[in-house]
Image (cartoon, rainbow, N blue to C red):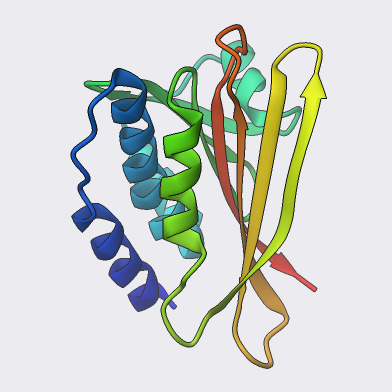
Length: 181
């Protein structure tokens, strides 16, 4: 399974589209950070935590905003196109990357390219494509794809939530999670 993630990372990072706007650049950076941190490390998030240990994490009160009420840690991930936040809740097979501003259309396109057509033996199923209006973020869209292999109970869930409104606190949130069914 880890060989699969290395292959996926190489494919994702080699897809270097020439993007024109700042929002597109931010979405492209989001996709690269999401692939290199969450997708690549999902099979062993404890190893990722160990790599991150020397890097200061966000103070608990700031990390709480990104951990959705769960215990864990969050780190700022600086990039030339913005600051992104990596969140790793404790004792969960869950990883998330948040970005305040990015082109939601480009983020959706890049995310879908990464997760809709997985390498063999995985199959991908779109399990959620939901749009809704929220008071705080305006129109949001959530996409979830589930990867599975024949005769296994564990699956990988990739989820992207976007909010196109410029007043939204976060415009893009991507998560990856190993689930059992």
